[in-house]
View 1 (cartoon, helix red, strand yellow):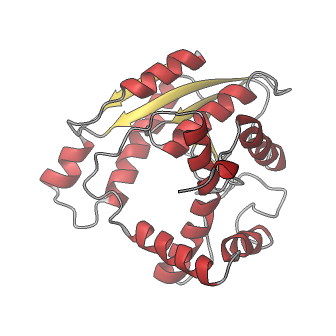
View 2 (cartoon, one colour; view 1 turned 135 degrees about the vertical axis):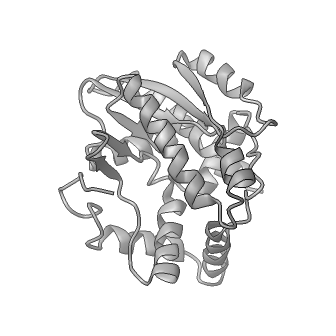
View 3 (cartoon, rainbow, N blue to C red; view 1 turned 120 degrees about the horizontal axis):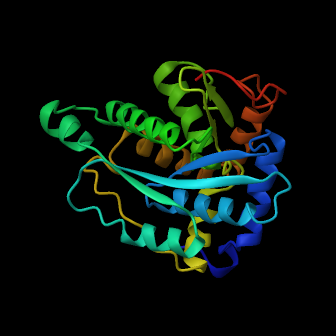
Length: 252
């Protein structure tokens, strides 16, 4: 567990998020931004951050919270609904049969790829119907590094996702405002404000290649303290996508 000194305040979270938003031009005047909410700590931290940023950011924007319900029977989204009401953020749950298709009909041995593709498809359709031109994903700093390591180990290339990605076919822009925030700080933020987190009902949760890479990098970071930050710096100084360039839009 992390001590009280690591319990991030909302002001600190906002400072990291605003820097990312400003550095990569994530938000423009009049944007309507959908926030993909899983109910986990990362997406809830993002919800709080953008809801607070909306109150004082010089460029006015709207936010709309969306959850793609994969169809597991034991998912309770009441805590998310309550938070959205508290923050005065419109919230919608998209009901799907993705779990049945992936786990029962297809019986996928590696379900994450197909599940992610179907989930994004359902989300993108809904946000277009809602008039949103952007969608915010809750990928944090650790995710940036872990994705790079997955690409390096499993694909043989130095690559990770971009801070901002424009999807030509959907005419939707993906933004990732948490890219400067450590996962440990998100844990501290959630604990400080006693925010209820919805546990993932997915049977593959914590049993994936991504989880293996995450634990591997954590172990390396223990042996060579600060390696995660150095990896992140290497990504920022690289020619991957728009990380160090002025071109914030690139196809995914």
